[in-house]
Amino acid sequence: MLKNPSLRAFKCPSCGAPLEPEVGTLTMKCSYCGGTVIIPESLRTPAKASGPTMGDVFDFGLRGVDLNKIVGNAMQLPQAISLAQEGRIDEAAAIYSQITGMEHADAVSAVKAMAAGHAVSLTPGSPRTTWGQVSPSLSSSRSVIATPAYASDVQAQKREQSGRGGCGLLTAIIAVVGIVVVGLVAGAVFLFKDGKAPNSIVPLSFANRSLTFGSDGIGAGRFQDPRSIGVDGNGNITVADFEDGRVQTFDSGGKFLSGFSLDAGGKKVYVTSMAVARDGTIYVARNQKIFVYDAAGKELNQIGDNQHRYDSVTTGGDGKLYAIAGSETIVRLKPDGTVDLEIPDTFSTIAGDMDISTHVAADGLGNMFIVGGFHYLVLKYTPEGNYVDQFGGEAKSSATDEPGKFVSPQAIAVDGYGRVYVSDFLSIQVFDANGTYLNRIPMDQGVAFGMAVDDQNRLYVVTNQGHVMRYDVQSPSQQ
Image (cartoon, rainbow, N blue to C red; front, side, top):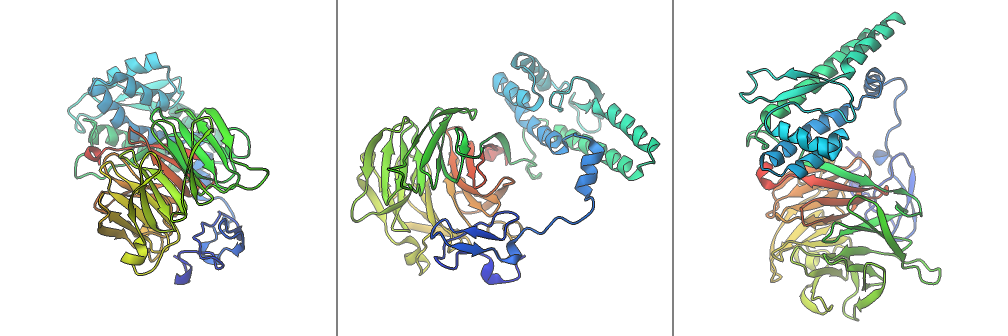
């Protein structure tokens, strides 16, 4: 919790822009005005305490066994089981291959057996597995769980450690970890044996990360300051850097396909926003206009006039183009760039003060959602431009302590089910179309600066640390 409430938003003292502190740093540069800002002490990451932590003990005791990965894989089994039982064998096999590293043909055989209630392996690349039957008291089905072969290796490791002087604490921890893992896997098989969670059970994995790529740099597949992301109808992913004007496109697996630069004569080109249509057309907001490019980077059109100075652009679920002009005015555009609808001064009208940090998204029906970083609110409008409601509000401490409240809202997106995703400080909060809080997707690789949703309702995120991630999100029937 921050000591000084005035620092909750962490805005630039010079221009008022919202800032996200970098982990472990004392100062940062404001990307809006260029000034150097001292990060408040209350927002700095505390130094790691001296001596081994419990996490260190776990890492040492497990000797390379990735507990988080094993548990995460177990939580993906319900989705694979459900797909296999529906006869969607190839899709189930793809998930199973991702978990285990198994070849597709072998994965097909495995998921068919899994759908029938037989054994599955949860440890990626494990060459040896012993199988244990789930207690009949857990389920009337024939579900079984895997006990990874590294259990015997751990026993040998414990004997070796004991010979060196004893390590009772590590032995106890390893035993507890083994019980927890087996318990979680057995629980997942039992609770989700039909591929769905009971209504009384909170889902253990609302969003599973299925793709991660990208790093810092200037080469292909690397980013310097990525803030915008889009995806076309074929699953190709396009990412735009904010400061150097680079636009890169990747295939659905994260492999670099092509790229182009908006650099003009050595001058900086600031991309304030970027979106991609289903046909691959790229829309870039810069210099208060919207520039239209094909996938190869050829300029097709420019959208803008003296009355509209565009800061942000996105494609809606209805296929139309939506933009922000003059900081807080929503503009809906026809394919030829002419204005179809305008909602002026959104926050000034509803909240009484203007907001200079806004982003817009639209669902398949044309309902519009605009998030304001200075008001910590999301405003909803009908396709006709009528104000409906608002949700959110400023968190008094951290967003994790107050679900549905915001610390520093950034990007916004809407999926095909009408759910609204709002990027906040180190997480993405999820709401239904009426603004009811549903869930949270934690961000462990930076702040989500840009978001997009594809036709399969998968969420794509680009963070300030140069990482692109794709999440497979549960359907409402599985929530």
